[in-house]
Every structure is written in structure tokens, then in C-alpha cells.
Image (cartoon, rainbow over all chains, first blue to last red; front, side, top):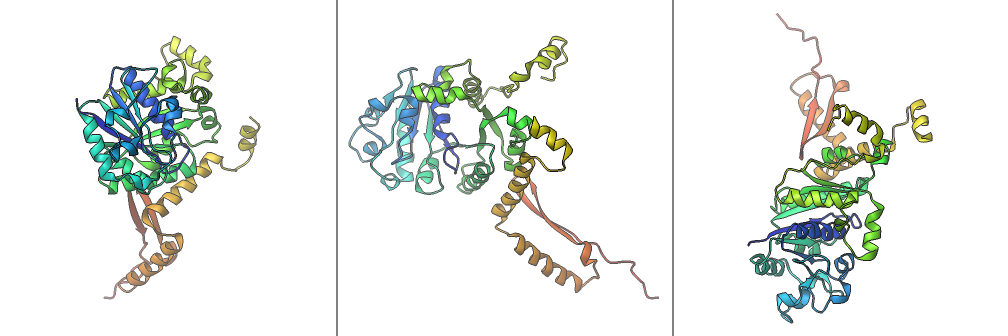
Length: 267
Length: 88
């Protein structure tokens, strides 16, 4: 095994990096992949609560880097899915406790035993972000269909390219199909046109995400939810499958159903 | 729905249209580090230089930055003033 290292970043805070890491990790692991999720947001620990593992933390990322524990002692086993692990970040330190070289060394040590290493980047473009992208084989930029988030995503794409990490792939989060139809939200096509990078997936606005986060259970485990399905599709695309974008237009299903009965549906 | 009907009867662009246009401009600005003022003075300088060699129609001159993938392109459309009178 030699794991692929993927970093998810966004520039702007609050667009859904941590939720995306937890769910892509869960979706990959549910397909039999061995996955570790690393929280690289030192001082603002969050991936543990989103994955529902906050009560199991003994050692963290900084303990590993500073040699207070072995790497596998800091790997917390997920309670829902086998072969899913969390390496939590330190809560009482700051981003200077870890260097980009530390992150590269840590990931290299992990690679041989895993299929995927997913790194949750902090917001911003400073040291914490540099730490998070240093070991990345691929970067995923996540954004919302909003002016400020798309603008920050564009900056981040430029920086990732300048750091010679290749062109990132794009994940659009919290797309509200109804608002797009009313012409009150940028569509996925608009965002892809403006940013001009390859689209990895779209996660629709879905109240079930907040409910599942409340419980500390990833939405990816609920394959009845649209967001859950979206994350599974993203995982399959990462595994190299060619999966079409989800039909997010289920609410106006009447005409769709009729047209599919007569075989004249567009899809 | 109210929103939808009022939009049919007015020429007001939708909020998504506004977002798209604002983003287009702000991204060009961010990517090139060139403000609209700087673009104006670039235009004036360009006019100056070209006028030294050829007579141009300054009023119809257009200069724009367009997006081509992640590449920005500076496009100048400069009509030459005519008709050109030849001396025999």
C-alpha cells in the first residue's frame, strides 16, 4: 500500500472543509479503503467533534511531531467504520508547533500502511495552510456558491499552483437548487466557469448534514440523504470511477418522471 | 414567486447575475493586480505610443482583460482612423 495524500482547503472559513473531510473519509472507508484523516488546524480542533470522536483523544498531532508518543498511539479508530482513523490536532498550541517538513515526514511514515490520507487545512493562507498542503499529492478546493467564498477559492487555487501542487479539483458545497432556479444563487456552472478548474463534485444544501453533525455521525453513512449520496459519488470519483453528477432536481419530479416514462428524459 | 413576477416586469438583473458580474471583475482584479484606474492609464499610455506611428480613432478604442481558462488576456481593439489619404 502507498497512500495518496489529499488536502482539502478553501481560503475562507466556514465553507465545509471539516465536514467534507469527515464524510469523504467515511465514504472511502465504507468502500473498504484504509483511511486516516488528519486535523491540521492547530489550536482550533474540530474534526474530532464532527467525526464524533472527541472523547477518545489521548495524544495529538503535536505529540507525535515532538516525540511524546508513537504515531499509532495518536491514531483514533472510528466507532462506525472499520479502517477509518483520526489524527486529532492540538488544542492548546499554535500553528508554529508544526512545520511543513514535519507534515511531510509524518505522511511518509503513514503512507505504507494506508490507502488514503486526508488532511483538513485551516482557513487562511498562512503557516497552517502551508503545513497542510506540503505533503499533498492532490489538493481539493472547496467553496460555496457565494461571492466571498469563490473569490477566496480563486486566490487559493493560484497559491496551490504557485507551490507546484498541480491544479486543484473543485468541490462545491451547499448548493441550493431552488435558489439557483430562482436566479438567486450562482449555479455550479457559473462557479466552474469563473474558477476554470475541474469539478470533483457538488454537495447540495441539506438540513440532514447539520442533524448528523449534531450527533457526530457522518452524513455519508445515510445514503438516503442527497448529501450522503453526493459524498459517496465524490469518493467513487477519487477511486477513479466515472460517476455522473447527482440529479439534484428531485423536488420537481413530476415532469421528470413523465418524461422518463416516455424515454425522452435528458439524462 | 413574487420575486419571479417582479423580475419579469422589470429590467433589474437577478441577484445571481449581479454576483456573477461582480465576481468576474473582482477575479480579474485579483489575478492581475490591476485596478480599473491602472487599466485606464494603461489605455492612455498605449494610445500615446501608437499615435506616434499611426493615426487612430481614440474614441472607439477598447481595452479589456478577458478570461481564457485560468489565463488572463489583455485585448486591445484599436480602430485606425480613416480614410487613409495617399499622396501621389
